[in-house]
Amino acid sequence: MAVPISQMWTVSSYVLKKKLSGNKRYPLVLMLEPLFRCNLACAGCGKVQYPPHVLKRMLTPEECFAAVDECGAPMVSIPGGEPLLHPQIVEIVKGLIARKKYIYLCTNALELKRRLPEFTPSKYLTFSVHLDGDREHHDFSVCREGGYDLAVEGIKEAVKRGFRVTTNATFFDGTDPNSVRGFFDEVMGMGVEGIVLSPGYSYEKAPDQNRFMGRARVRRLFRAILSNRKPTWKFNMSPLFLEFLMGDRNYDCIPWGMPAFNIFGWQRPCYLLQEGYADSYKELLETTKWEEYGVPSGNPKCANCMVSCGYEAPAVMDGFGSLKGFLAMVRGTFSRYNDPHALKLLNEPAPHGPATLVQIERGDHELEETRA
Amino acid sequence: MTAEVLKYTREQVESLELAPGATHENLEGWVPELATEEEVRQALEKAFDYRGDVTITTKSGERMEAFIFNRHTGATLADSYVQYFTPSVAEKRKLSYTEIARLEFSGKDRAAGKHWEDWVKAYNERKAAGEKNIALHPDKLD
Image 1 (spheres, rainbow over the protein chains, first blue to last red):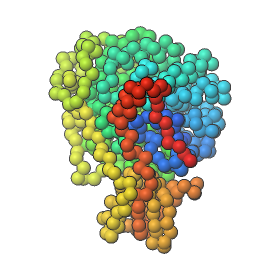
Image 2: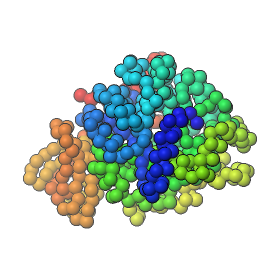
Image 3: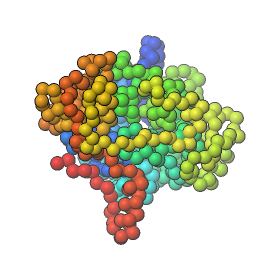
Image 4: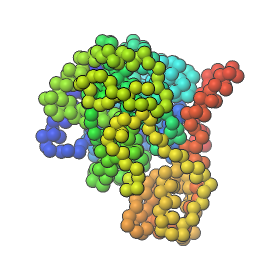
């Protein structure tokens, strides 16, 4: 795992403290969206489709700090929109660092190189650069030729200046696992601290509804990608969450673990579903009908979700909340997940369309895998 | 989530190959009937989902352009309200369902026509025409 010891200590002591106090619902990462405006126009994006007067609105630094203080999560992820378009983003970041929050500033990095001199390297600040694959894949994914080169320039400059940098990628249906593995080699060669990845999710309000994988397909893809790892690959994520993506373990969604706050308020029930807003985190916790979400609820809107905002929190809580979980996390950190069946998956064509269910012969896998 | 929504068992969810997406309704320009309580509730639910502005006319005759980002549905219309932004006011505003006389889906639907397939088609055509630096650009804000 590529996460520094000080961050692990902060998170582990936070989780243990909450567990000892008997607190069952607590936040781990605040998803703070200071604006929705973006300098990309990715087809199918479900986050930026708003009228201009909404896109012009931004959270003030004071609103950001009030949300962070109320929620109390030790980590703050700043997605959007593109946070570097916020004229007060430096002030927001400084205020969060003063509060000793570990920040992941998620950016497409088109503006990163230009704005880097305004920031100061800190163990609390990580630039999490959106890169969806190699040059061809990324440019096509973000609908902008030249986007990859600008992002890589930003990454290299940030690494050179001593910033913590990770890349984050979202993979959709049809992703070629071999290409992704080659991409991992490429980004680790840039000197980043680690890789963050996620399966795509079918935002109900997104314009594009046809490119989203179901859970069986997600597990097969991530098993192909993440098994037989190279020692040079580092992931800035919980190893147990990666095992969840590979189908080696199961978790139920904890939407309150990564609550989202933006110009509308506290989003119900999570970062991905927009079923309404609460005026405070307390109101969000107390008035959201949590039993209506997640796989056990049978809610079709949650059926294909395996995204970190719902499932990484339980993995982290598992890893730091019990000796068994901790040992599994340590094992996962150093394992290369050698798996001959996954090697075979790498030689299969990327799946398209519905397929039949096949049991993969591997006794220690909890979940059924499918084969196109 | 309402009771009539299709529920999945865990087994069905775990074996899903492709996720069934939501259908995008073409609501731009729609003026719903608001004669009954049910019509009011349904129309405002759609307005909440709509990714564009609506024009609200209140029973007192005020007419406003609004982006509805939240709604609270209570047992009666009097207990129910929408929250919205208007282009000219910085603060969030709130309006009871009982105050709404007319609703028009007047603003451009910002989620319409931005499918992945549209991008793939456009990209291939522009590439074949020899274009360089092909990109989609965000809509102008002014």
